[in-house]
Length: 239
Image (cartoon, one colour):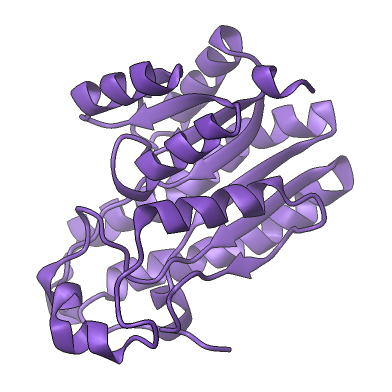
């Protein structure tokens, strides 16, 4: 497929790692669909700057995600790469995690990835090619205090990815996960910005969103990679 006609979808694409991923994909010649929730101004400006298009949908809503995928393919063309990057993070000890936070975290972080896979997967399989990248976290590999809801959802994303990779692989569709370490975005709280924490990282700094985006695009375009977890984390996790 000619590069100028390739299409990518990035959920959570208006800010942070998602925004950097949109720019990285656009620099590779993709027309990028930017899914957002309540970030109309940011998404529209980004879409205009990269020649893409902005769409609004809550990734926790399977019907809304399917509608966005149908709209993107009607407007731009078949989606070749889908990046599941929508998310949020709240520090809270286990005993204070209420049902509302549990439900919303699982619905967005885990359900959001599952809903994207359910929407784009069959279309990619019918065409015999495609690539899906789920954004997890290095905390899914290590665990973390005050983060049980977030870590649980991000760890479950890895199980989802591995299962989808097995289901979709025979039809030419690759599914992988990128598990970033602490990255300098709007989501990074003061706890992770403290100098004593940064000094504990082998590379002595937080990552840049552009560095994570570079890895996401590399994984998405790797034609002999599926069912894998790649973790650009500055050495926070060494294995």
